[in-house]
Amino acid sequence: MTDTVLITGTSSGIGLTTAIAAAKAGWRVVATMRDTGKATALREAAATAGVTDLIDVRALDVTDAEGAAACVDGVVQDYGRLDAVINNAGAGHLGTLEQGSIDDVRNVFEVNFFGVLNVTKPALPHLRASAGRLLAITSVGGVIGQPFNESYCAAKFAVEGFYESLAPLAAAHGVRVTVVEPGAVASEFISNVGYDPAQEEAFGPYAPQLRSYLARTAGAFANAQTSEQAADAIVAALTDDKPPFRVQTSDVARGFNGLKLADLDGSAVQNLTETWIS
Image (cartoon, rainbow, N blue to C red):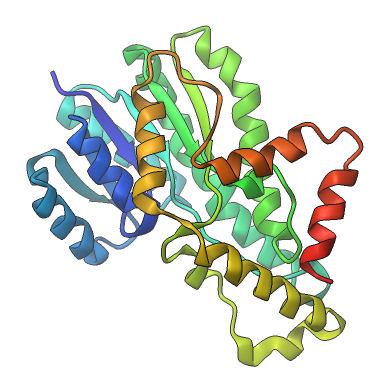
């Protein structure tokens, strides 16, 4: 029987390429997205890769808990089991608290944190039954806090903390939990953070630091890994007999996160990120 994986956020970027890579590795992929009208690129990629018969596109808004539960139940009803979940859906956010609102922060958490929980909760009983895999695509921003990404990093930190806490309990019941931490990836993600250069004045006294940060970020994404390279690392974690809890998708991400994980007093990270806005 073909193993089944549910992947969220597959209309573009890492989600799309991971869906194709998983199908090429022999998985039945339930590829979900909020708007299935945006599935054209995925369907075309599946046809090119010769895996159309292994891609099942379904609608899923991860911020809708009832909809997420119904989607998971539908997959199990149709295929008899659920062997893995890859929580990939997410949304960036550029801003700083003083110049934004608490509601902005809540909205970021609804997608990036609670969206993961909305899918994870109904999936867990089925993953226990299949001794399955549970993955979340976080970010190097889930390990290192970054200027103007307070809300996004906080949500990704929350996912990492939740999954790190859940992992040993899940493992006691046969479910392997992994967080995957990409660095800069050449995808549509960076164009979807909601930044409008014409509104730079809205950042008030922080505008000079914003300009420095954006210049640094443009350089990082100019040298980004491809979404296909990130997808290969994700599928490797999905299929590894004994996957680690924490996986980075590139040497750059490994070096970046390694700085934080060895930084007991926080000075190394602060010395680095201060240079981004100076």
